[in-house]
Image 1 (cartoon, each protein chain N blue to C red):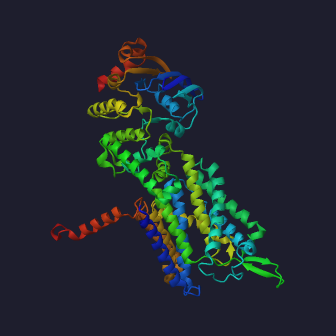
Image 2: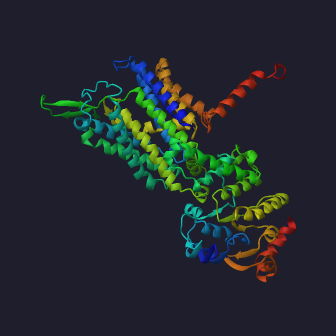
Image 3: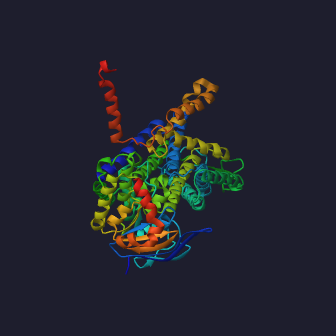
Length: 260
Length: 358
């Protein structure tokens, strides 16, 4: 049984069809890239998967049960976590608290025991803190744990978002342009980190990325979206040679990459 | 936290409050200095109101202007329970509103506080569920309207003399043709500050737990909070209900401190007073809000010597404070060991500076 199965998902905003008949099947442990020109509907697809929008039509099955139209927090509880294209941290909270907040899903004590502060509460709090600290160390953010999230540099904020997403202990991790705005060196480091994430945390990863080199480098399978429709899917090599993709996308990126 | 530390802390708070209560009232249970008692009790009530409003406005970042409505519900429900329920529930209490011994007042005050608090919490739930879909200015307007509705409803309830002022009930009894049951004078310094300590403790323990982080995450970024598995609606309503509960208790305490209850005490401006305390103390900072509540209650009293000019000086001081510390007295800091250490180091640094470098 596939981990995630999306069938003919469509999302319309009034007259605009942002995602049209989107179909996707993810096996557990895969690393899949979702690419496409600006405005192709990639982020909308993510928003459908995470419950920000309910699909106009179509089905989304995760671990064998339907999640279409569920609330984002329910989908997070089911095991899908994400990062955002335009970073959405909790800016005034500390780096540690950002990650601790995301341990909420596995946090047992009730509100009353938080007020009573008994032994089980202290244990749960310490466990949450240790888990958050370990994730921060994993992403090289341990030394900033007491700083506010907004004081971090851009690349560090991106890494913190991934750490926070992992703190919900997801089965499926959706990364929305994790390398956006990074310099080539940072990009390479991040990609290396993402590559090892999968084995270390046992997550399946679906990522949106603009940088073709990055996507082709780490993904085993790539889907190409254009005007809300999947126009091609396959291995990086197949995608690179697909005439439809070259027409819709790669030409544009080639022009862009020659600039960079 | 080890058990002895917790019980030690509770015993310490009880001891201190009992001592304070004894110093003020003595065995006669009548305050030596009524003015001092009045200011202290108003300080305590202000702390309860401000810290509980801070749970909504400071923690979850929602903006309620209607908490005076919950205060009013708590006050009238509490007063109605102690007067209408007098013969059945509290026959041991005096009917003339004379002071009650501390331990005699314990059970009745628990009952009226819980009644007032629960009634306010129930109304908070009813109001919060639909209106917390809105935020910012819209929520402020809705809560403001709600406070007005409560005011108008209470004004029209004859049973509690809502239109004039509620001083108690005329009751037919056997020996007298018409007796009068006044609202019992249950509230003393001890109870007010006990509740204040409780609400500060609850706010602190929420703030420094993963639960509290969920409240703060709602304030910081709702979409991200939802994506991290936080049911934001649940936490917003929870904050609203919790805050209404403590505000209602404050109302019940207030009702049993005054000899008469007038709807004049629950005008919209009182809501603003509390909002000012929260903003001035630092949205979200429990220590800051507590200090601001005391400060803003005492300040008008301290300015009494300058008579009519205080109405000019007081707002001016507020403006100056807001201009110099727009983030509030404490910003988002809390008084903690680390904070004290930081303050001490900066003071020490001030003194250890070498004169030739200045």
